[in-house]
Picture 1 (cartoon, chains in turn orange, blue):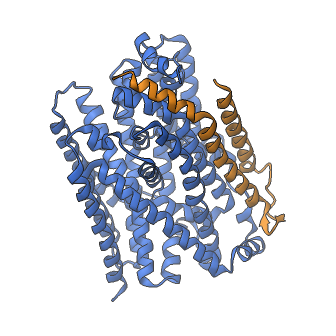
Picture 2 (spheres, helix red, strand yellow; picture 1 turned 120 degrees about the vertical axis):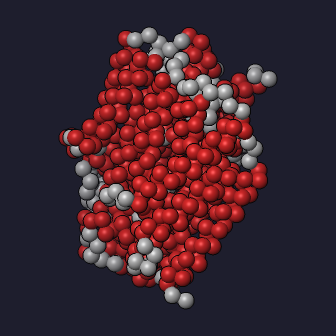
Picture 3 (cartoon, one colour; picture 1 turned 60 degrees about the vertical axis):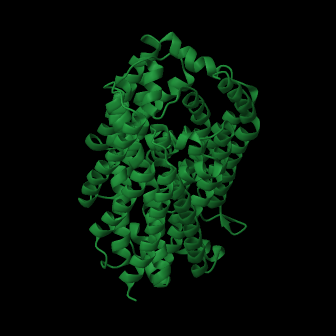
Amino acid sequence: MRKESYVVVLSTLLWFIAFALQGAGIVAADPRIFIGGIPLPLLYLLIMGVWGVINSLLAYYLWAPRFYKRAYEILEERE
Amino acid sequence: MNLVAIVLTVIGAYLALMLAIGYWGYKRTKATPEDYYLGSRMLGMLTLSMTLIATYASMWTFLGAVGGNYRIGLSFVSMMMMWNLLWPMMLWFFGPRAWLVGKKYGYITYSELINDYYGTRVLGVIAAIVGIIALVPYIAVQLMGGGIALEGFTQGGIPYAEGVLLMIIVMVIYVLIGGLRSVVWTDVIQGIFFLATMLCLSLYAVHLVGGFGALFSKLATTNPTLLKPNNLKFGIWIGYVLTWGNAVVLPHMFQRLLMAKKPEIIGKTATSLSVLSGWVQTVPVFLLGVAATILIPGLTGAATDSATALFASKYLPSWLGATIIAAAFAAGMSTLDSQLLTSSSLLVLDLYIDPLKKKLSPKEETLLARIMVLILGIIIAIIALSRPGLIVPISTAGTAIAISSYFFPLLGALYWPRAGKAAAYTSMIVAAVTAIVTWLVFPFPLGIYNVLWGLILGGISYFLVGLIAPPPPRESIEKFHGLFKRL
């Protein structure tokens, strides 16, 4: 696996764990705490949402360009 | 004009538009299976993104998910947001490799890919049977949702059965005549319509409550449990996440991975879907669900699935309420049309032509595909009219069976050259049986959702048998993993 792939996979795994910890009620579970008018559980959820999009952007900018280049090379071999 | 007439006018106009698109697709469809099922693999980012999200977001999103947020609140939306962000990542994981071998070797279905890789014909037959069995409850749910929405909004003015029949008849016509081109372009319209409607509806609901600040402070004082992230048992929560987060392996979703025109389209689509699915589809459903607890309080159990329709009938003028119902129809039809077309491909290609080695011309194959769409439409309508149970458990449990049994054979074909056909057979059967047993016989053992049990036991059996039994044929490994090594 290439170095760029590790970044994408690691970020996604950490995101999955961080999100699951909230689902299990271990982190950011107290609805009485408000930050900037937003309940803490909701704020944490929104941060997880942004992180999820970042994972896709990491794949797009770090991993994908090489795939495109190699895919074209492989497909051209047929002709 | 009375309510029923308004609803019929708005929905009639919407359905007429769908038929017009179906006719447009018909004029452009060539009589080949690749064109009828995959649109000749020529989809761009807009069409692929919209057909994926429209296929993924179903009537359940409009009704069941709003009801889920009404009952459970933040715990429900955290689960939804996670799976709605996970599946675009799984699209990154499976999509590029599946697209590459699909394009290079001409696969149209999941079964064709795994049959070729594992060097067998029977595996694809099992996969197709699992696919058909798993899709049936899911498809029935969409039709039921249409009937329930229409009946609820018109307070019985349009009976359930008529709503179901209206939806299936229009859809069968445009899928039958136009194939994938009709499906994709109706999906684009339906997807935009559905997402925009849900966004406007949720913002209006928040406005009625008094804005975001008022909504959250009212929830915190009147119903703080709706802001807790752990109202659901974790085993159920993570089970749903893994079910829907892996939805790209479902037959109708997987087929879409093969439709991209160029490799860049896959990447752009996955990235755009993380925003469309993770945010645009998810947040409005939450806002509408929790705002509805203040605006239309007192709903419990299955009645919460009617929250959207009740909100529309109470707070919107009739014509706008009818538009909301049309959007619910759009959400359902955009999923159902894709499933209908894919089910036809499973029956025609994977259960008839390939295993029986039938030699048909492309024109005959396409005709057979169209006949199958018609037959399936009739069967599905009959099932939906019998109204099986609650929306969420039916659709999710059926999907769980397919996801848990499809996952590991595909994973091996794309990432692990060690496991051969014995591992694939074992995993597929063990996962499917486990998902059924932990749903019907011993429901959710240890509080863990059945898809997780299916994935765990299917995965263990795949890797154990894969290590012991012979690997796939050498030429298959070279054909697939030889390519992947160069990526």
